[in-house]
Image 1 (cartoon, rainbow, N blue to C red):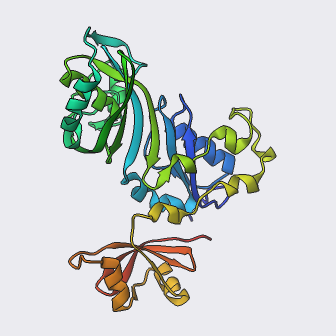
Image 2: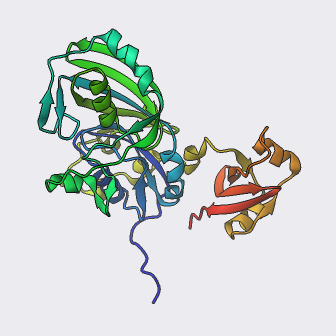
Image 3: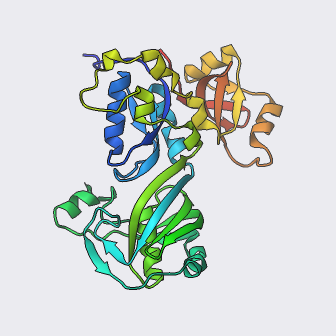
Length: 321
């Protein structure tokens, strides 16, 4: 018996959602997949329900480009609340420790370089890290406190934005994959001899996607999102017009244009040969590695390939049937 075909529309592209407060990432994907009546959808980079900001949602063939977005840099603007640590390392948890110390701006700026670059970080107990096959947050909610291991993460930059009062400091961080802002604030507070947690958190960029590309549910729908929403009354063309092409996720990769015949061969999983000047242009000054290449034909995405010598070998092929 053949595999059952998923119902819905063939929708392809990215929607750059400005996720609202108290809305889970999985919930946002489910809602948008339903609104678009899309067969397939996923997201690039989970945001806590209490965080707001950029949550890129991929539809259809764009889901094949999700890893390239997830591996990109992420920018966060967040407010640290000094003097209290919580069970969840954000303002929704119970206060578990207090301190009378409130760090001054000069103290904070002095210590920020210690948290920049490659650093060791223990993820928050309330996180999606798996422990013996179970999510850490599920164990924590059941009263267990799993011991999570430190791991190396990268903070590309970290700067103080403002100190609106003695209890709060606004900071901005650009991070690599796997960094937890809640853990960062926790650790900075301890290094300053106080307690702390995240009061507000907003993600302003994920890989190539930024705030100026984003849209809220209200802007997308022309009304607040609700369970009573009837998708049959929505303007499908207006919804589709908000999608950006899947090539927008691949801007960090070298790109090459191929002919129609080569595009057909790549889509069939066959390698094609490129001219030596093209291969040299893709590699640039680095000749001893096999680069990942985004191939297109007349601006239509064709495949993600590995350039081995003069051969483009497809690793992921885009099919828009």
